[in-house]
Length: 261
Ligand SMILES: [Zn+2]
Image (cartoon, rainbow, N blue to C red):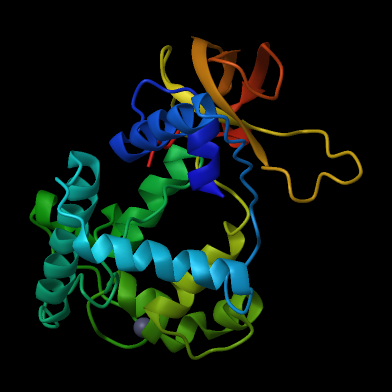
């Protein structure tokens, strides 16, 4: 689907393969061919698609083509992330490893103050547990367990807080990842607001779904951000010829970055 969309929409950063296909199409049209593209959900088991797939694969074996830098960049990024993850997998004694075993990005909470609190809890550095270092005082101690207070002790170990665990998590036995899973559930449907700038190329979400639109793309694009307003709202203008309003105002939650590959 995204391949067909990239043939249809005009963007400045078009993939070289797309440009090549468009030139070929124009050539064929001049020779009187009428090419119709059709998107079929799922390739397997459809004879025509299987044949087209095999033909495409047999050609790519013989083609000596330069690799586009965008593809190279994606491949390099994937490789670097894999090496990074493999290295991190071995750092099991690093105290941050158990908190975040994956090198994937941690989505920020929409309210910065909450995000700061959450990060402090994750890394175990809070004013309550660490201020004694700045004030040259003794470390605060749990009066019940007679151990120094730590975020881990309060959240996971200390029996004094069992009833809070039961109230909020319905169990008194928790791990740090259980707590993080819970946070993920809370934010599952909330996407962090991305800050777009004027001149950014974006896609905007279709807001009206009439009948028979199920297979139509959920987003219109490309659009250019013309103005950033308050509360993550933006004014956008259509680039090129495609479906969707020419000029409109929308919110960050209903936009995404325009992806050219
Ligand atoms: Zn305790």
